[in-house]
Amino acid sequence: MFSMYLFILFFFAAPQVQEVSLEQLQANTIQNNDTLYVVNFWATWCKPCVAEMPYLEEAQKKFANNKVKVVFVSLNYTRELAVVDKFVKQKKILSTCYLLNAGTPNSWIDKVETEWSGSIPATLMYKNGKKIFFREGEFTQTELDSIIQTKIK
Image 1 (cartoon, rainbow, N blue to C red):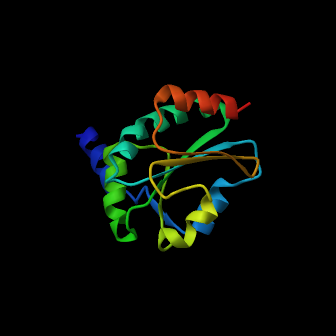
Image 2 (tube, one colour):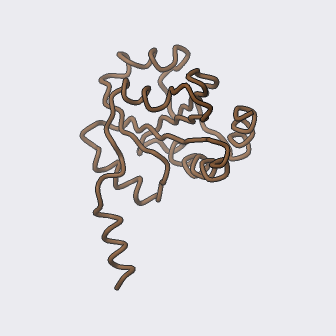
């Protein structure tokens, strides 16, 4: 009975995914501190995005003592907040998750990364208030761990 209560509490609790503007996202990830922010842009319909999510979750756990924070940013439509929230809960994603509400990509993508074509998955890393890494495309666990290892030093 208690486990059923926890299940209900988990699935019907307040939304895990928060809708944010680009300015709010940047304020939460481009901070002048020694934390490495790994910001991954994805969508529920993107198979490579979904495939690499467990690698990012594992990196969050593996490097938690090294001031690494993984942030997932969904590019689903804002009207799909409930869909994204349900997806994140079903996949048991524990990292911070946002749904970006910034208008059309043409209006904001260059503010994130001028080299970004718009394809996803796309990952940026920030440390000490500066972008220190950008990559379009997915990672293997080994690649991701190796890159994070070099960036936390």
